[in-house]
Structure formats: C-alpha cells, structure tokens
Length: 632
Image (cartoon, rainbow, N blue to C red; front, side, top):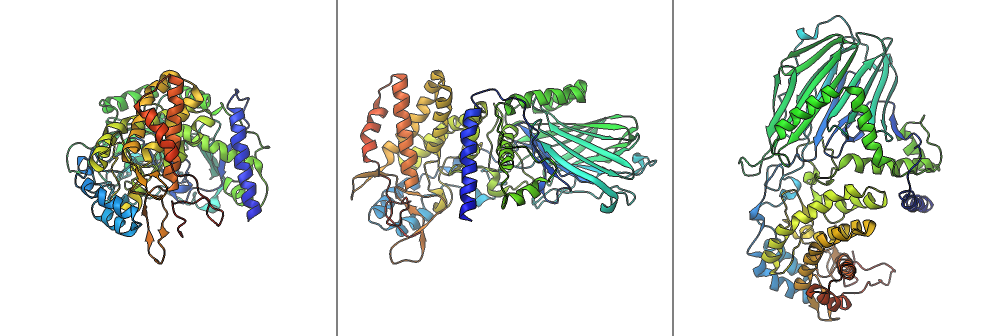
C-alpha cells in the first residue's frame, strides 16, 4: 500500500511539473483521449458531464429511455440575507477571548454555540434551498423516450407528463420507455458504447439492435452557448422518440408552436418575488419523418435524423433572460448542426490544446472503469495523463468568464437540494477547484473566482464590523452568490474566519502568472482590506507574545483537552490560520514593493509578521495543528 501511495504521489508530482513545462509552449496534435463505457449509466454519478462553463447536461446513455439532466450555473435559490448579521455576537467576543486565553476552550465553545453565530437560519445546516441562504439546483431533466419499431404515428400516443414532479427534491422524474417490442432487451443490443471525448468535448452513445445501428452526439456549445443532441441511424426512418421536460418543483411546462418551454421562479427564502427566474426552450429539427406536439412533449416519428436544440437562461446575471434564451435558440437553429459542431470544437480546443501531457499511448479499447480498477495494481502512466486532462476538461467545461465560479458541484447537479447546498466552501474545496487554473494554462477561468472575491468585500466589511468591531473585511468558511460572509450557524465548523484571506491567495497567484501591474493595482485594496481585518482583530497570546486569531477552528478536525474525552473545536491561532495570514501579509508586501507603495497597512504588517506563531513540530514528528500539542 505504501509503495502504491508513493507511486501515485510520483505521478501527481510529475504531472504537475510536466504541466508547468507544457503550458509554456503551444501543444502539438493531441493523442485521442476519451472516457469509454460499455453500458448505460445506472446512477447519475456515472453519467458524462458536458458543459460550456455556463450551462451543461449529463446524458445517461439509456437505450430506450434516456434521462439527460440539465444544468445552469446560475440556478440558485435564496437571496440577500441581512438577518445573517447578528448584532449581539460582539457583546460576547471579549468573554470568549478571555476564556480561550485561560485555556477554557470548552466554555468558550459553549458560549459561541449560543451567541457567536450568524443570525437567521444561516445555511440551514446544508439544507438551505428554501432558506435565504439558498442552494445551487438542477435546472431539470430532458427525457427522451425512444421507439425502435416502425409504422406507428407518435401523434396517437400520450405525451410525457412533463409538468409533474416529486416535491421531495431527492431526484428527477423519469418516464417509461416506448420500446414497443423486445428490441431493447439486453441480449438484443450489441456493440454498445458511450464515450466522452476530451479532445473535442463531445459525448456519444452507439449501439446496434434489430439490425440497425443508432448513434447520438451531445455537446454544450462553447461558441454558440446552447446544448445540442443529434440522433442518427444507419437505416432510414429509424429515429422515433418523444421529448419532455420535467423538474421536481417550481416549473411550468408548455408548448408554443413547435417549441417546448419550461420556466419558473426559485424560492428566495422569504416566500417573496426576489427568487431567480429561469426559462428553458427546446426545439427539434428532423430530416424526414414527422414532428408532432402533444401533451407537453415533442414527438418525432420515423425520421432519418433529428437534432435537438436546447437553450436556457436565468435572470441572475441577465435581466433579459427570456429574450436571450429565444435568441440563442433561433441563432443555433439557423446555424445548423455541422457548423455548430465545428464552432464548438474550435472554441473548446483553443483552451484544451494549450497543454499536452504524453505518458504513453492511450488504451482506447478498454473501458475507463476497467482501466481504473487495473490502475490500482498495474502501472498505467497513460491513465494518469488521461486523469490529468480530465481535470482540465472539467474546469474548461465547468466555468467561464463573466459567470459564477465552480461550486461544490462544479456545474453539475441532479437535485434541487444539493449536498451542502452546492455552495462555496472556503476551507479548501473551492480553492482545490482552482489550483490547476494558472499552472494548467487556463488563467481566464480563474477570473470568476476573482470576481466573486471582489464582490464579497462590502458584505465582508459589515461582518467584520458587526461581529468583531474590526476594520477591513472577512469571510468565514462558506459563501454563496448572495454574499454570505457571516460565521456559520454552528461554531464547530462555522468559526473559521480565514476564508476570505485564502481567496486572496488566488488573486495574488493570478498576478504572479501574468505580471499585469494594472491588475495588481486593482486587487491591492482587496488584499489590504483582508489584512486590515486580522491586524485589527488578532489578540496577543501572553505565553509567547504571539498574535493569534481568536476565536477560530481548524476545519473538520477536533482535539481533546487534557483529561477530557469530549472533542473540542473552538481554539485560537490554529496552524492553518497562521499559514494563510502569513501568506497574505507576505503577498501584500511583495505587491507593495512592485507598486511602489508604503502605507499604514504595510507598516503594520512589518510589525506583525515577527509576532506570528512559528510552525511547531510535535514530539511525534508532525506539524502541530494547534498552538498546543493536543491529542486529536
């Protein structure tokens, strides 16, 4: 096991080093890289993620009934929450700090549980879709019910019940397949394959049944900002299906002419009218056969080919979202499939082809899940290269300029109540999403996170003043598009207050890779504002004279006080805080030198840096996580 771990660590280190070298030069022709599977997905996690950074879909490759989950990065419930500011919290701060200085962490923790927390519901403990905090949500599901027998007019069949849905929010509805015969029994299906090409960001499904080979192509256009599905077969009049839209809640589905439309408004958390409004439009262009509409669905009977066009938009960032969705669909329809595909590949490859990593020839015959199993015991460096490029693919597909950054779900979700609200966890999750941005030559994809960080400053200033009586701005361990910056509703995890400072590391890194002084000048106030918070809120630990955060916590870990078997979370000056703040201070001094600035913040930082706690090694040889060598 240890040898295998060393082997994997070597692969990761080598991949990162190679990416640094490769990102400095244009990539040559990429070898074929794809994820391949020999059966349909049996769970959402097995579906193939497609996206253009704003919208996405995940087809499951179903043979007779296919479920395609749709996503939009701005599908967020909730709204601004002024109740998150708890004006009473600051009254208890001196007592909490006194208890921590006396080593009475448990008493300080109990006081925080009761008083030093956000006002209102906070994140509703990760179930915030109906709270002001909100949740990132699935847009809905497109269901394609295929029929593989011929001669039956689809207009005589009952359409999909697209407007009905479960209110449980645990998943999205499906409908029964329309196979009509036993053609789709597993024994009658041969040469099944679904794949996701990393080279061109196109997914495919192919199989044969009843003497006919069927093919489907799917992509989220990076150029034309629509979702496209093309269905073909090697025999004429073989394409028959019904298409319906559904969503578990807050959705209205209708037909306008030959367009299938789903729209609604998400909960703002107050039963008000501030919730995000969305609209999705679906049209089908068929070659041969017949197009029908009935009962909230579109039907195609005995066509030679069909192309499904999907546009979607919300009013979070686009006040004219309804017109935008209509325009995008019309433009795509008029452009035509082949040109859409060519435009998409060109736009996607402009980013993907910036980095090439060759660790041997790719095995394009073995299914990816089989390669993964084999990788646990056999050496397959080419699989490590595939994994590396898949990470780049997910970033290119999951975020784009002038939009929201990747969240806990990336861009993709199949629920309206996503785990932990699908928000931005700032105690490592969001940062990990963006570690590859600069080193993998995707700097423009860093900007959504940078823009979010800038947008948090006004709210963070109110939080700093309200909870700590401090200068500057602060964000704790989580946030959302509504600029939530307060402590979480439970101090065991919500007390961490270096989330904003850690985001500032990404602002600096973007400069470090670009050398753009104009950009550095623009972020300098954001960096110094984050530093001003700690300069005005840290307290002196009397034993050593160290400056420490108080209160705080070390994310997702607890310790035991001497003589106690009950875990404690609240502390002062955890090592993570020390490292993040020291990095922030150091980056500011470097920025100030580059910009020729000497101000009150830089002078205060120079005084504070020598007082920051040092890194301490425990008797067991580990880096201590807390000021004291507590048992974890």
